[in-house]
Every structure is written in C-alpha cells, then in structure tokens.
Length: 211
Image (tube, rainbow, N blue to C red; front, side):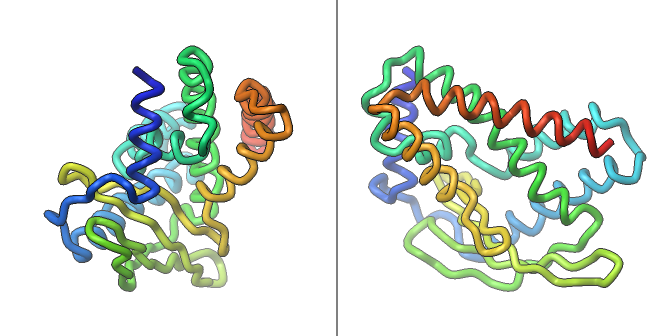
C-alpha cells in the first residue's frame, strides 16, 4: 500500500499525473500567502516565549501538513528507489524522512520568525503547477529575502512540493543527497534511513543547544 502511494506521489510530482485546472495562479498565491505567513507567525511565538516549545512544535507540524504534501515529497526524494525497496523499508523511510523534513522546514523558516511574507507573483509551469514568488522582510536591519514555492494542485487541493530558500530548492537538494547515499550503498534504502536518523539526532541536539 505504501509502495503504491509513493510511486503515485512520485509520478504526480514529476508531472506524469494529470493535473486538473480547477485552481488558478491567484489561488496558489493566496494559498502561500495565508499558510506560509501563519507558519512564520507561529515560530515567532516560540522565539518570543509566548508559548511553550512543545505547543509550538505541535502546532507547527499541523500547519506544515496544511502547507506541504510531505508524503509526495517523500516519494520524490526516493527517486527510482521507491520502486525497488520492500514495503516495510518504504514505511520506515517514510516515517524517518517525514521527521527529518519537518525539522528542515522548521530550521529554515525559523530564520524568518516574526518577519512579514509578501507574495509578489507567480509563474505557471503547466496546468495545476506554479512557482509562487515571495519576499520575507524583517529582522533588526529589515532585510528582504526571496523565498519561492512550488505549488501543485491535486484533486482540487493545493500543496507546496518544494521551497527555494537562499537559492536552494530543499526537496531537490534532499533528493540529490538521498539517492546518492542509496546508490553508494548498492541500492539499499536502509543506508539512507540510517543517515536520516543520525541527522535527526543532530537536529534535535542543535535545537536543545539553542534553547
């Protein structure tokens, strides 16, 4: 079941699944404006101490599910290996990668906590597929940063499939790293699982050190 989900997700992200045209570029822009700004505001509550870290993390994870299609991103980053791994391995990879990916989003977006996000336009890649452009402004020097979002429509729903932060597309970068690890291990997805577990431990240690 999980294998079928990942294969379908990967095909959809690669553009092989038919995308409906129910939504417009304006819908995609409004989706990013509302959901991404909400996440940035939530992270500011953690930084300011308005709410406990545990409360904010729980809220953040729920909001990430509203914003991003983590299951589809999981299929994308596995590349061709999603077709060769067994069901148990795929399920474990999905669980571990989900934890890792949410931590990455939290780390990257935390840099913009308390900032203001403004959507500045979009590029239509195809039916139901957009790059939404935005700027994030704030901090002591009121600096402005560019953050782009790839938004895909599936069955009428909009979800972010990738985000470009400081010029780097996060999911594409993760795909390059993970498929390289698996390839170097002779196609063994467990090698990527082991690396991701170690990175999660490093992420958690970094968060503890910053508190």
